Amino acid sequence: MVTLTIFFPLAVALAVLAMPASNPRLIRMTGLGATLLNLVFAIILWIGFNPEDAAIQWRTTIDWIPSLGATYDVGIDGISLSLILLATLLFAMVMVYVLPKYERPKAHTFLFLLMETGLIGLFSVHDLLLFYLFFEIGLVPMYFIIGIWGHEQRRYAAIKFFLYTRAGSLAMLLSFLALYLSVDPHTFSLPEIIAARPFAGNLQAGGLVLLGLLLGFGVKLPIVPLHNWLPDAHVEAPTEGSVILAGIQLKMGAYGLIRIMLPTIPQVVREYGWILVIIALISLIYGALAALAQKDFKRLIAYTSINHMAYVLLGAAVWGLSTSPAVRQLAVNGATLQIVSHGLLTGGMFFMVGILQQESGTRDMDRFGGLMGKTPVYSVLLGLLAFGSLGLPGLSGFIAEFEVIGATVAVSVWAAVFTVLGLIITTGVYLKILISLVMGEAPDEMPAVTDMNARQLWAVVPLTALSLVIGILPHTLLYLINNTSRLLATMGG
Image 1 (cartoon, rainbow, N blue to C red):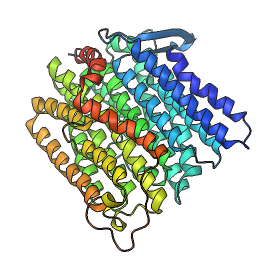
Image 2: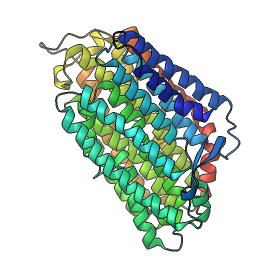
Image 3: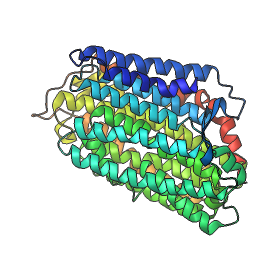
């Protein structure tokens, strides 16, 4: 079932290439049908998942390259299942959003379906070489999506995106090779590498492995100073590209931190944990301050991703520094909740940016005001997404950030103080959005705007509703990940 969920989008993508270009609506409906059916497959995985069992479930293992110790090893645990559900949902919502977009629909649909295969595969594999393969499959299509369907500076942004992510993935591959060579017999099997505890007695060499993993995963998270590609990629990408980039692709780095870096080299993470804390706090505060300075609505939301995803690195660092299983589990739970919450809320925010730009032709927040009177549905949804992103109780962002901060307090009160400072600045960022766009009087020369149509509502409302469900009933997600995070909490202790 996991294999079907991974490769079904690819099979449909190849079928799309054979379709006549003269029927763009058929191509769009095929893409939408494929993503909706894949969401159903993910729900079937969820229904058949036993949350009381921390072991890998729905597992398939086949020899792939025996001479290298590489296997086709796929399966899910609570954390990977959460991300597969998020990915299949966002891809389906993107296909709803782009239904009327008929510019090169065949290539556009093919690239998104190919990317879905890469990302779901990444969240399912338990072999490092296969992880690297899916990592590349999940990234390359975005280069073409930005470069072909993006805005004025799309080629510059696409090249910058590709160079940064390619350099990061090669650094990650070097660390994978070091882990491979550290185990006897050599293997890329993630469970076997975790069991072998490589570099536990050689923290200096382990530090180099940590550096490679941090470069690879940190570019995609992104962390300061590896973030420079992100604002340009988001600003120049089409709306659907920004939704997937923020909602899913940034999670590649976050997932790698939690599921690969922490369990493979836990002693090394503990040794260098304070460096990770410092990087996380710098990223958290910088992302908020940079967002606060923006007038371009899309660039502002792009910078908030640096702030929000820094909570994941902070959770990983606290996991490494703490010796308490309860604190470690709280840190992993908070980081995982933040991954899912950010995907829902920031994915929704980029939809809202795209809708406003499509209606008005601009993203300059200074040109708007008083949208509550002109577009009440849009304004209410924007308010819910903004309040969720700033961490208001009752929405998913609060639960995630509260757990990470709670775990941080147990390790360092001062680190928690700086985290709260970043949270205060972030609150100012989202209040700025609401004051600029929703409240007050409309400027005399404000572009004409209309409220959201049914298709746009179908793309945004499910994301907002799920953030509310997780915020009010966090157990709906926590019950999936608790046993996986509990197992992680005991590793390297």
